[in-house]
Image (cartoon, rainbow, N blue to C red; front, side, top):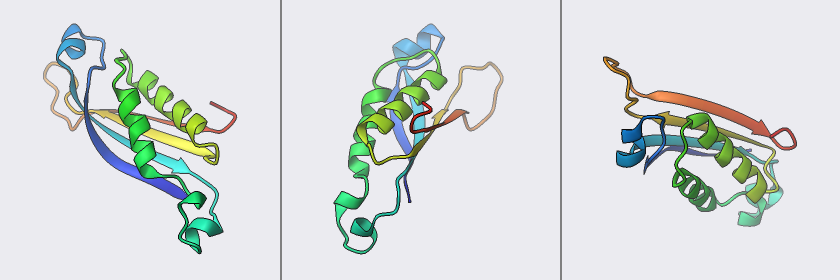
Length: 122
């Protein structure tokens, strides 16, 4: 079973350029958390059989507040934290897009890093 939060929009201060750290920029985060299918959630309508996506959002929001030079580092922090905070999760995927990368002359929808970690491998 996959729980996904798609294109969370956040303002953060990630990047190698000084102005990115000072001014910040807009980012999109998508997270996918894999958990084993549970009768509690699927049949019994019980939150105990799944992951609370509001709690997933809070993890993403907190980790995005810590400035990093590399998007890869931010993805790693988010993925490791989700695996740690949600022990039933078996795999986590994080996609992080910098909406306006500071590249002279570029016209694009953003620069994206994607990372997938499995329990015990991250």
